[in-house]
Length: 368
Image (cartoon, rainbow, N blue to C red; front, top):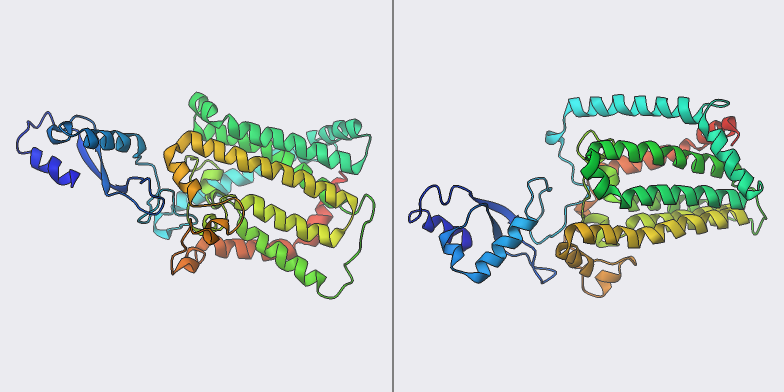
């Protein structure tokens, strides 16, 4: 193999000429969507053996572009990263303590500046939106979701340039401090006005509907995008990265957040059954469908050919790549869900269900 050739050349070349030779055990992407090439070689100075081979030089150049010490380990045959992987031995008490402190401080700041009744800026923002919508609940929620979508997706699109200017951590902090307050307004306004609008149906008394809605809502949270699990990156404790995931839920759909949102909207629309819920669902799905294109574009810009390979063996529509034979599930596929983040999702989802009365009381208190 290529590494052996370079090692053999070491005996013939000067130490200076080969001082930059390094090897990597990371697989190089292959044109075949299911096959990984042998380990690639990164070269900082020319290797005499490789220099005589056009194919080898081309392969080495690709390795130089593709290899990165910052990437997560990849199981054999994968181009993207292993989703929801969690290694307790790699966790730092200091990092989690810093995360807890930052979370407490940020939430406190958001309350004082944005949420606090009578003093927070959210009252002024919502008043402005309701003025444009003439206090129509359906129009108001659409405007709130539109502002959030423009800011959230716009900042995501500007991320490469923003990180170059101020750094990844600083940009993530700005992203969170702008997006999170807008999301809070959307959630609180939805809770307070979910039964506004024109009634269309009422199935809440039908046997089995509550159980069906509960099950759909529960399942929807398993379609969270895997980057959500990287909590320390979300909080900028660890340096944030644009990941390209390939295992777990990504084998089912390349855009799990959109599918999960669709399931959540279907469940809540079935239960609430009015025009406000229909409009809210339409607004949420419009943003997530745009996010499918936007997310693919960003990954393509960052990863190039590697993303095209992942795209070729995944699908937007759930299970499509599997039944078309482009995605082959491993025999132990279920193990990709038996991981700490999914146990945490289970606990969070159950907790959120039982916390509904608290969420409703807090929303009513704000009177948005």
